[in-house]
Length: 500
Ligand code: GAP
Image 1: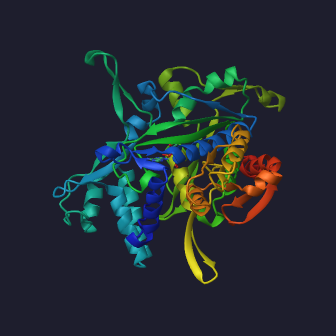
Image 2 (image 1 turned 90 degrees about the vertical axis):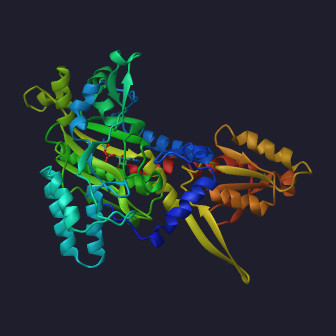
Image 3 (image 1 turned 135 degrees about the horizontal axis):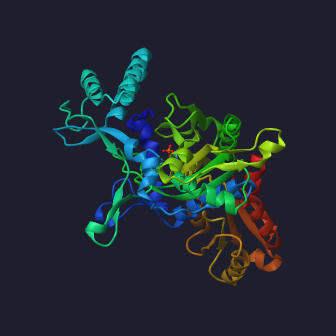
């Protein structure tokens, strides 16, 4: 995939988002007190809520909205032959090159793509295309010497040492391996799964038979995946430990393109329904298809560092099931009764598969980037700026903040009563420290859609003011209406209706 890095100025916005994420408890570098671990991150108190909401929404969109999609939670460790069958042992590689002076390691293909992007930016589109095409040919032919010569011919230098003193290009497998077994001799090498999809393939018949599923049907799964990414950049965009949300949809051979188009459109609508602006999303058809695919595209989002893949939609044919059938020597076929009803001969077949595969962390970054808003507010003669997270209320970590105007006169007691009556259904915050203005600002920064202020009038007539995060407008309403008011905004219903 082409990585077109933007200039430092354009990247400034990503810097703001990274520091916002840290300052307000969304994302922390892993093991930070030991100076962190590259490309590994932890989700803080706000981050875990937002991420859980994203995962929960995806899960329900798949399994609750579709009668023919069910869930699965397979283990991270799998039999080593799984990864032989899937092709990961032999070909899940990145071509890497080291600079002998700086001792830094780079992805050879990414360096060439960056050079091509440079030509394109300079207006030499033809040269850019020719370079990308030549690299494609060399990689296809596994001509790693040719790739190195291309890097030298293009005078690509190490950004750290400034020299072109390169080693050979070598293929590095991206899978992490570890040992199972108590003593070294008994130990056997297994892998941390690099994708969740294989857990679905090996359970295909278990689910089909026990769930009495009829093709077409899907199996959805959310879980950790691990890749030894050498070029780990752009915050949580490319991590070594990340979460995938994948759905494999099993179809009758010959019908796969119809389903590919359906899932492509449904998934794009989903991204729009959670509040991502349409003009920030685009499809990118794969120029070069993987050996197992007969169609594939990425749904890309315009991050501060350019349009990049968020989700892949792949038509994977019967490749994976056939491979597992061969290596395990177990039949992974489906007996299709309906064929006979349609006047066609009965048949066992290996279903074709349409895959939707999205990274929960990359989706998190997309949601954060599209929610991060800075605006100028003019009041009378003065102008001030405000930063807030315009998150879809269904995704917001905290749905409402209950704020007594003062700490006395019975207001905290009344506010606590309101908090207690709503806490069973919504994640909320109760806060009485600092001025009401400062408290509103704190809630804006974490994206809380509603601030409920409890004042002296509340004690008289059981009404409160509800401040809207995006418009800053306040409405007065009876306490008895709060539940349905919040519920309408935060429920998944409005999102689901857009997918119908
Ligand atoms: N089963 C197909 C598959 O794994 P992929 O394009 O390699 O396809 C699917 O990955 C999605 O997983 C990507 O679109 C991205 O959202 C996410 N992803 C992949 N590698 C990642 C990484 N190193 N860090 C974070 N997310 C990643």
